[in-house]
Image (cartoon, rainbow, N blue to C red):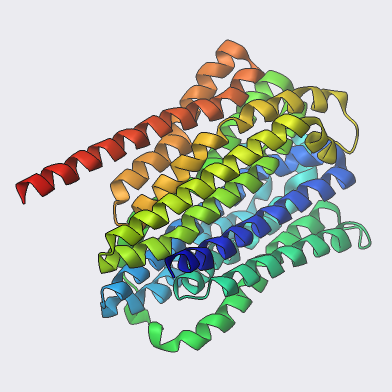
Length: 438
């Protein structure tokens, strides 16, 4: 039964996260065909915006859904208030992005490092992405609550259907309708609307689990949710911050070609990251349930399964890239740019070394968050997501140039792995002392 429970939540969530990453891959491919390497550069400069939107949505939505699961397992009626509270605050935090999209998308692009040619190419794309910010952010609340109310297949269906729509609409809008990057942005913006609609239909069947009222709105509940959602926040925003830092460094080292090469690497890596986040987030409702009921042996079993699955994903990704890096890069190098191939092919091999360690780090962060150990989850997430990788990227790029940029991801994951190992040893020591005292 425990094995079935784990598979019932984790596998649909992995498929859902992969579905999300696949439409980003489709965006990258279609844009490379329509606009070439400049299009990939424009897209990669906008990726940090996606990362921020997804991170805010994950922190509020996943954190609120985890609080709901913990409260429900403990029989606390306050859990019913977390859904509407999450929707309300998600809409509030989306307003600045909506305003930026309406009034100054070009300034946002320039702030992200775009030159005049890239601004002209990507302005409308950026505007549409920002204007759909409320849907990107709120979508996390709907999918997380659907998953945590025992309907992971509905969450998977919502994500997969919206992803398939995005891929199909990408092609139709960009080529038959000749809308270019504007069409790509429109397809991506509509996809979370479809996901929300599917999830909403599932939540309507769970009426007794929620209270829909402005009396549910509480800043205290938001903070409590964000505390447990920090690992999800950093898991998402790490991609954004890494992309932002790498973009600025690579612009200085190799110009737009280097940024385009990183666009290929980052979008390929996004699939692996999505799978690892899928395992981490899919494990959380199961782990939270066992933790709330005090079922220690079942809790350990869930963690071990998540860890083994995550490491397997990271190892397979690394082996695949080591064997077929050139083929992966060629998919997006539709112009046949020798410069792009020269930078991206060795780069993707070095970059993917980090995923073996990232697998463990993400599993640990998700487990700590699910069991109420927000401090440990936050340290691991912040370490790998911003602090370590920023430090290594700056130091290694000055020492080894572009090669140093690719190596910084692996270095940051290895250091974070060591931090996680220290947490594990300290926790075991604490439990041992507690048992002796008893």
